[in-house]
Length: 286
Length: 160
Ligand SMILES: Cc1cc2nc3c(=O)[nH]c(=O)nc-3n(C[C@H](O)[C@H](O)[C@H](O)COP(=O)(O)OP(=O)(O)OC[C@H]3O[C@@H](n4cnc5c(N)ncnc54)[C@H](O)[C@@H]3O)c2cc1C
Ligand code: FES
Ligand code: FES
Image (cartoon, rainbow over all chains, first blue to last red; front, side, top):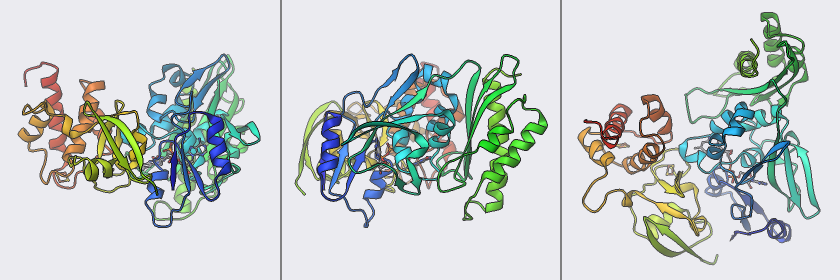
């Protein structure tokens, strides 16, 4: 196995595209190194992207926050403007692992690892985040939910890597929230995670909504039905009941030792209701 | 596999070493550099016994490749005491009997020191969350939390 640390994106893409055999991008390594230790792991090349210029920066433009693929999640929590704009994305990213994991892990890695339970991904999907991808054929930008295809599988082609995750600047009176259920208070894998992103009218009615559910299907579920229950409401009890029912209905989870199907569906509704309330309050709704 | 030459700074000293591409920083510290303070509890990022500081952030050295240390600054438990003068956290861990077998202790000390650098006056809850990635199977966490609180008080110049 070779370890390479390219300084430019072009070099990184070249190395990934030219290698015969298996190649892996290395960001924070908090998934990849755990995998490397298993006997089945087999790779010819590891491309460490942390020395590529600009990869470790968060750039605020007029319309967006451009988060380099090597920015660790702890740095997201330290970025005041980003926290103010996307509190839910930042709280989801900061839920990943421990202090030690936060110092390394990235949201791009969380996305590309394609775990159904990845914490930052529902929040990114609800926020309408886009991933900028570079590869042998140039650059393309896709909605983040187009990258994970199922557990451990992505739509990235040979030689491609995610350069940045781009979050749009939110409209006025907007906010998001993310909640997950885990059996402990820290350091565990989401049994269910729900992200809600709302924009309110001047009078406090919900003008637009996005609701994304994690760990209840092979990939994140962006539920239009759940979002629709909130439109035109001020989160009255009936609206929240309808949202909870829609979140449960949109969930198609597995049964395992960490939660039964019935439990997961129920919790999806409970968390949807609470996350909506949080997002609404943050957006300035009363 | 051919070895990689790495130059880095560890506890303030320039250090050069050779390592294999798949060798972790923890293995380099322990097996090549004789720095045996960082421990391997799990090797998968769950226990924090291998905690070291890299460019000011605490990381699990079992989840960092030795090669990734190139050009970076590493601090380990060996750099914590100044000669024979123990760091306040080290003294308070002893005073409060916040250790038994001691395997988890270097990781707790390194991680707690990083906390007090960013937050000199943490609440109990903040201490417990910050240290959630450090597992102890002997002592129970109360004594550890109390030792950190006491050290923080002393470091803030309040009478203990
Ligand atoms: C102790 C522990 C606790 C954890 N807790 C949580 C948790 O609570 N919630 C959670 O969601 N996850 C958790 N994780 C998993 C992991 O930390 C996250 O998925 C993390 O975000 C991965 O990011 P990374 O930068 O470390 O990825 P890496 O390990 O570097 O990469 C992950 C995968 O994505 C690929 N990849 C990375 N970056 C790119 C890129 N830019 N372009 C293309 N491919 C790329 C890699 O090749 C690899 O296959 C935990 C892991 C550990 C060890
Ligand atoms: S040995 Fe690194 S976290 Fe357990
Ligand atoms: S003192 Fe033995 S594991 Fe903590």
